[in-house]
Picture 1 (cartoon, one colour):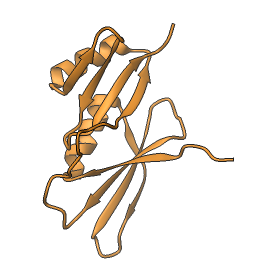
Picture 2 (picture 1 turned 135 degrees about the horizontal axis):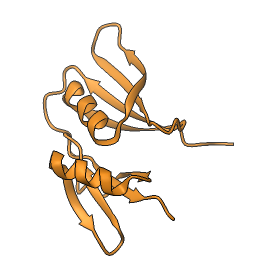
Picture 3 (picture 1 turned 30 degrees about the vertical axis):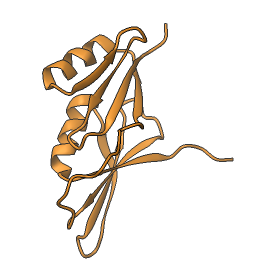
Picture 4 (picture 1 turned 120 degrees about the horizontal axis):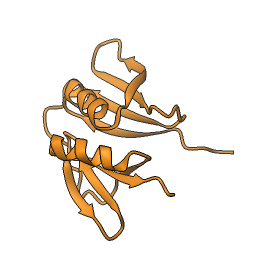
Amino acid sequence: MTRFDHYNFNVLDLERSLTFYKQALNLTPVREKTAEDGSFKLIFLGDEAGSDFRLELTWLRDRTEAYNLGECEFHLAFRTDCFQQLHEIHKEMGCICYENTAMGVYFISDPDGYWIEIVPEKT
């Protein structure tokens, strides 16, 4: 048997990313690992629903250039029962990068340019 465990985003500014994910999606650190020599840090974020799935943020000390995300044809998605509230928060944050009103979803972009889809809970 296999199951999803986590997804990774590499980030340039760990504190900026942690602040973004807390403010935008209420994700908080649940586990971390730091290299003995300080060359990298892994922070695993958990959601407020308590799911087992984690978003791993990887920070590399010696990385100074932005990551090449290609055409951003990949994304992480979150389902929410407070869609309108989140939309307002994300609008105020200025992080909405694409809205598909026909499908009833929108996307936000994190500080490193990763796209995250926001999907309303089905009723």
